[in-house]
Image 1 (cartoon, rainbow, N blue to C red):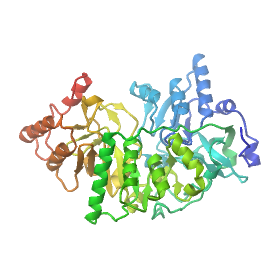
Image 2: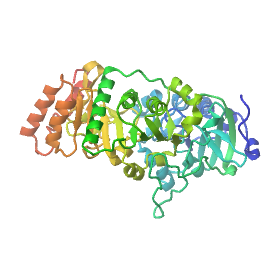
Image 3: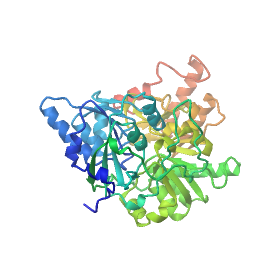
Image 4: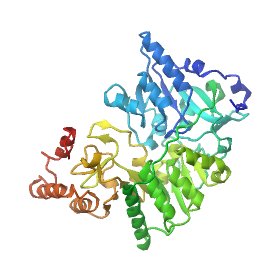
Length: 502
């Protein structure tokens, strides 16, 4: 363990082990934990709590809690607690395989929420009482203010709303993160709300530290544990082609004077395709770009390094080990170009619309009319959650969704007659992109959209069947505005569930 980063005497007196801190969390409570996409989550207390739950359950004493976070976390938190059946309710987003299995088996309740809604729902009292907050920080100042770590997420709200607070002070987190954060304390409840005074991605409207009433802190745990840093695969051919279509489209929009030469702030979802798009932009003709997004990944960090990206605003990092090493090696320079905010600001609809964000997010399937399913497999099995994609899609200047055209070795088409679950309606989807091409849906009626989606985005192996379905729906459907054959609209999914090719 390195030198203590706890410089507040009152909080230093509350240092204890993770097991002692976990013993202070009773069964049946709601616990708000830090963490967003594998960054800044508590590492020791959740694991200790999982051990305690396992022991209690072995004695026949059922022990479960509600777990609220910023977004996904890591196996040491979600996985550990799910494995011992310790989670009664999970929200707002998860990506853990054990959690997913229990949710889809009906053994764990899960509420999938737009990430911009979480903090305000807690403030409104919509989700019930927040009993305990477990928050990782990079250090504690002498006056009790907290240095945030590699994510902010909902930590501000957890610290303010929870009755009791447990702090994990992680000396693994780079101390030079101090000063990178911008914690805005100006939000209010209706009818007292005022405009968020943020007009540029690089603007700072708050302060670099989190506030916490020291009297609420019941435990401080010192740790030295890394974040979950996920490696990204090199862009495959499909990802490169998707990136190429988007780059060509953006260049076209500039030529048409619908975008400025330096574009508008970029938002990108998490994953290999998103990183491929960033790599394409890094090699493209655009200069002096900015980003207003949730998660800063390898691709954006590389763009900052190259000078293509002047500033980036996010709520968390999601980096590979190689990119993390690059960040730490030159953190003083990156700190001037990156700002980490609470997710209620990074995902705020008012700010997204004001800045004119270009939103680029992934999907599981899209249908002929532009509806998008980004959360469910075959209509009823949750994958991860909607995350912040809805916050951006509904309010972006450009709303782009991207995916390979097929999955499971060609057995499943990602373009279907009707999506089996709707997360983003046709009203919020402007552009669909696959490796096959790009469908610009702006200004098109549903019937016009269907033709463009089939010809530009569907895989050639599935185009004849989609054309046939649409033609028969036009001829025999109960209505001609959004033509469907209700008796067979989900036949594609039913074939897949039988193990057949769609």
